[in-house]
Length: 499
Image (cartoon, rainbow, N blue to C red; front, side):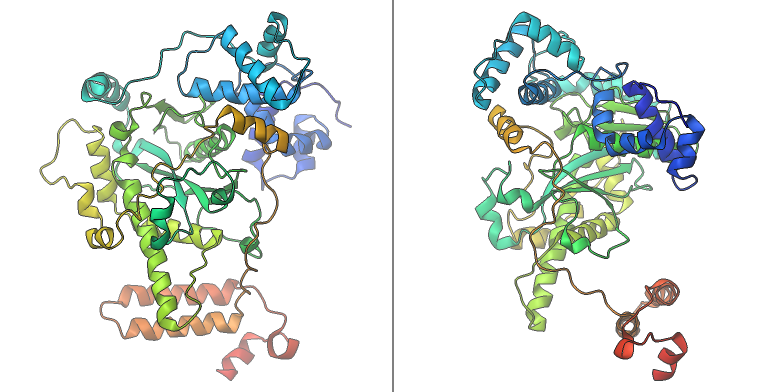
């Protein structure tokens, strides 16, 4: 039997990473035996991976356990506030921490909290907090303030990398159910929780400079197990859950480390740019990715995906919603256009696939990744459907200011601590029952209908070849039915003779 021993957070994180690399090759028992720990310890580490990752990147990675203070909720809220303030580049010192702690104690109804110097010292040690000199909030972006980055820092960062190995990742918020008639109503509303949070997603997009490698999107929803996911085995994107559908440091860390392993398998070294927000922790251990951060409050001019890629993506997504709505009207079906999370991730992934490399290259160029402009450069407007913009003014930009990270007021944090909302919502969303899975026969019939439609359309030869591949895939891999023809399973030869 493997001997039990106390593990530091660094060691725990390393075990989780090693297990991820061997997942699918070895089972938990074999892996635990290989590294000399009980399998029960391994299962506990995997269950608490988010907590371990958070602790490992908060300055306490060498410690074996975090001792909890007397007022755990108070300290959790204070630490959340501190991380957010640090991410926003705000100066923090001892008196400010104590004053904020007293404010939180009052909000939580804690009457015996003193906020002494001794408590503050213990709190800092528990959470690995060190004070540093931090500059104040940056002024609005202007050309003079970003000139040093453009002229000196960026060229120095890029010199050792080919354009194919330079990436940018950026998040955006999306009201995924929103139809044009509701966009003006929501224009000035905040989405910090409540009903609107159930109707939103956060999407992380990432592409390289040439647009030749658009990575699979990461979509963050509120519910871990929406009902619409029932029986679904394949997703077009990576889906994660967070109680307010926001990006967090843990989720970003998990994503970028998985990407790091992917590039490692391809023996690639890449440069990845992200913005300087609280959900993008610094100091993440990576082997194949060099993670660089844009200067604070400058992404509107320096981040490539912010130069038009996301705008084009959101317009394509919303066009798909409108097209679906119009189809439902024309078919005489229920025209309420009820969009669920599964619909949304398929539509947004399809919209991402449709963005041409030219759009991405032009936006990298606009963000000063090339020193010389090209006479063939196109503006963002050249990639947008202007007629759609004019027909539905404000529709595509209604959620441009939707928060995508944990930017909370102190009262929000207190309320979350009281309600236990720092945890992920594992409950199913309250929505309509998921549609029944199609039968094997109806799936094949649908292919036949598509073939007829394509055959009557000019220049569809390539699409017909793709459809043939889809039909073959369905025949080989579609789930085997158990209730065809009065409960008797229909064999392929029976199906063919019936046809």
